[in-house]
Image 1 (cartoon, rainbow, N blue to C red):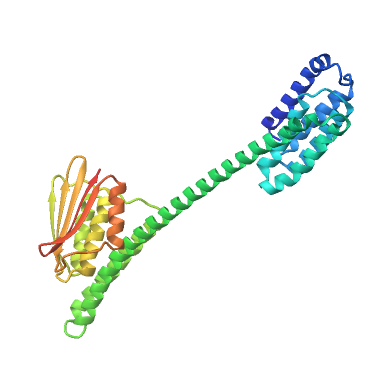
Image 2: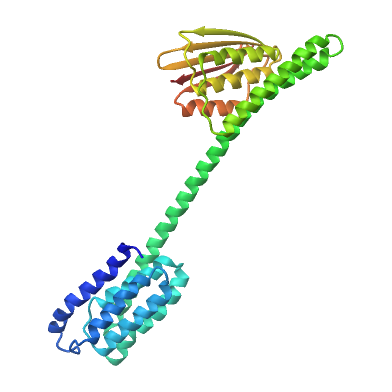
Length: 342
């Protein structure tokens, strides 16, 4: 048992024993206090230690000792506080119906002393149950609401993490498979007429699959990308080997790209490999002191578009990093433009 669990019963015992002589002096009609009154006060206060583990039986036991105290004729006092704490405990720990099923019999037991005296104390006696019961129920409802909010927040966090991992896997696997598919088509097309080109395509497939597998392992292991200046060149070279003519322009001093910028570049080029009718792309990287700008465009005959899974993931990453991303189809080109803070 924790030390703080003893604080309530100790305080109730202290309050009951300290006020008992004063209440005895103030009351001329109640029975004079003897050794039994402090004993009942101590027992009832001690019962409050059990209110969390066995709230139902505890409130009935407290009602019994409190009722015995009042039937004997001792003066009203803090013993009722101990009983009220037990009522609060059952209302706080159990559903309303279950708590009421324990509290109503406890109320009946508490009010037994009125039948030998007067029913004028009926309202105050009921209040000793109704008030702590109401407070306990309200506190339970608040705690349940907070628990539901925490569970909902945890669910949202889990959903966001699953979505993040899905986008990561999509980017890595999508890029690799797009390159592999293009090289496989080349190998199939040239296997009879130019077998040496087919061998080159198969070599490129092997390299692309190995790179995609390594990146997938890093992603699933939760490793953060820290691209270096050469990785943009390597990425463009890999796309060129997949059959896309990539024109790369770097403006400013080449420095490591933010991980988000590298992933956006990779996804934009993957889309060119997968969807562009004319396999050409122009990539412009603008290195600035506080940000990096990316512009990827390719010839396209579409006049509008709907964001797919890849574009949605790119936009989400960029916005989470505090940047902006636009994707537009106009004037015979499709262009992705992003600005990502460093």
